[in-house]
Every structure is written in C-alpha cells, then in structure tokens.
Length: 432
Image (cartoon, rainbow, N blue to C red; front, top):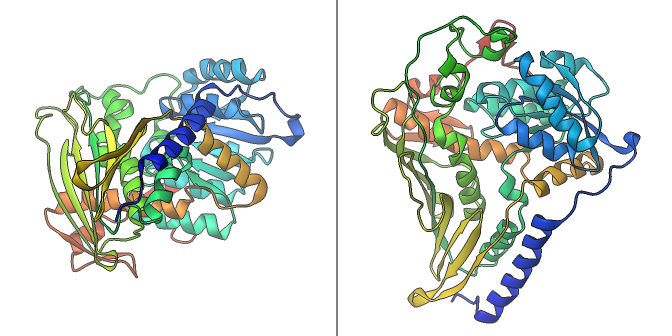
C-alpha cells in the first residue's frame, strides 16, 4: 500500500523548498588561492560550452585556465566571458591535443558536437586529465565501452553531464522509489515533447577563415564544408549526431533507467519516422516510440518523442513517469508529483533546477577520489538505450540484446552499426 501521506508531503515540500532556495539564491563564494584550485579547460565554446565555462569559472575550487575551439574567431569573446566571471583570462587554443600535452591542466570539459565526445574523453584519460563530458557520451556503443575502459585504466574521474543526477528533488524522488512507496515498479515512460526548428538544405561552401574543418570532422567521414553541417544541423545527421533521442532524450532515459533500477534491456523495438520535417536534410526521426524490455526486473521502459509539439506533456517538456502497483510519480526539471489510489494527489510541488550541484560533485570527486553522481559507466548504460533505439529504427526491426556480452544477437546489419573506427589521425582505439 502507498504510504506517502499528507504529513509526508508537507515534509517533502519543505525540504524541497529549502533545496530550491539554496539552488536559486546562493551567492558564488570567493575564489580560493590559485594553488588550491583545479585547472580546467573547456573544449567547445558554442552552445552548451558557453554555459558550462561560466559555471566552472564561478566555482571557488576551479579555475578555467584554458579554452579550446577549432573556430579561432570565437575564442576572444569567450575568453572575455570567462574573465568577467573569474577575473583572469584563460589561454586560447585551437587544437585539443595541445591542451592534453599541457601538464598544468587537471581536467577537461568536453562540450563539442557528439562525434567528438568519445575521442576527447579517451585522449583526456590517457593524458592524465579528469573529464566532464556532455551527453550523449558517445556516437555509437563501441565508443562508450572504450570510454569506460579508459576511465578505469587511467583511474580518472569521468562525470557525464546528465545534471539531474545531482539535483535534490531527483535524489529525493529516487529515495522514495527505492523505499517502495509506489509498490512494485513495472513501467516507466520517458518523453521528449518540444518544437525543433527545421534544417533546410544549403549548398556546400568554402571553409570559413579561422575554422579548422579537418579537426572539426575528427573521427567522422570526410565531407565538404556545409554551413548546416557545421552549425545546428549536425545533431540530426548520422555522421555526427544521435538525433534528439541521444541529445535531449538521453536525460529522460537516464532518469527512467535510474528509477527502475535497470541496466541493459533484452529487447528493443522502435517505431519511428520523419513525419513533420519532410523536405529538409534532417536524417534522424522527429517522431519515435521505443520500448525496452527488462525481464529480470519485470519492467518495461517506454520512450516517446515528438519534435513538432508546441505544447508539453503532463506539465513537462521533458519528463518521466514511474508506474507502480500502489501509485505513480511524474517528474521533470521544475517539479514532481505523486498520485496514489483513486487518483489522490499526495503531493505536487514546483522546484528550482541548477547545473551547479553536478559540477560541484565532479570537482569534489577529483579531490576525494570518490565516484561521481553520473560516472561514465552509468552514462554509458543510459546512452546505450538511445543508440539501441536508433539502431532498431535504422534497420527496421526489433533487436535482441545480450546483456552479459553487451552485443546485439542475430542481426549482422545492426551489429555493424555498433561501431566505427574513425578517420586518419582521429581513430577510436581498440586498446585504450
């Protein structure tokens, strides 16, 4: 029987309010002495990298000493952005290999396009750097396995940028699930319901001045420069991205897998299509329903995606619902609620969300040697769900997965898509 009562709800609400207030109004502490700080390089200064750089620069235990991007004209403005926060200007570099050669750098933050996440992380571990890597951790399953192997071999802290793992209300929700407050969990549903912009076709063009196009392509196949390949469009092309299931959806898949307490599925089935973006160059689907079966835990995980929705689902653009025998929970970045028997709402609260606890956890683990909240092995398991969902769509059939050997069984076509070796100087190593 569901035992979360109204008194519990008040306690939860009060605790959540305190956590929310802490996240939203806590001032940035004064900087520690330089020799007490972790030296950080942010790799990739567009998009996600801009916010991460500011966040790391604002931590008293860190100093952004280097920034790196293949597009040199971007570095000056970004260096000033960092300097405005930490009152010291980082060194600008265009080739991450020069950063890895610099023994003064303790950690790297990988905020590149997806196809670079694995190689940057592996190289970073080999160079003795700790790594904060954005999701999805990898472009394909083989890369993820090699990232885990590198982190273990070189004993590096590798934190995956699924920030919800460190946020108070998610931790509180997981404690409630683990305590059996919803009874036996048999299903979770994760969704990504939002409106994405189109990627129109544009002609190839000369490489812009200051951009190292060879390094940008890295382990991906060599192609001519194209403005929509370099900018927003790369995320929706199989050479570089994993679609929105790997981009935004992996956050929700991670939370769903975390709550269900599952690792690897035995069966994956995707029904997906490109329904709304007809006529543009997007290769990945805009509409997906993927089911994952976990017979050992008697559980099923369902993922839903709609990239043409100008509305939200269950109150959340991205969210997860957990269904138990005694009630259900719906949770998103800005709130969560629990519903019991006869649809009685036991509590429903709004919360604040911040990336800072996840960054602080990473920095703390570097100093203590502890395992981070989303260690690379956890990030690999969750990213693998996105890869398997995409592979099922691409081959057009259900996949059977051998969890013990981490392999697709009985499907040579899908197995071939589990790996790519890389290109030229940018090879994903078979031995790390």
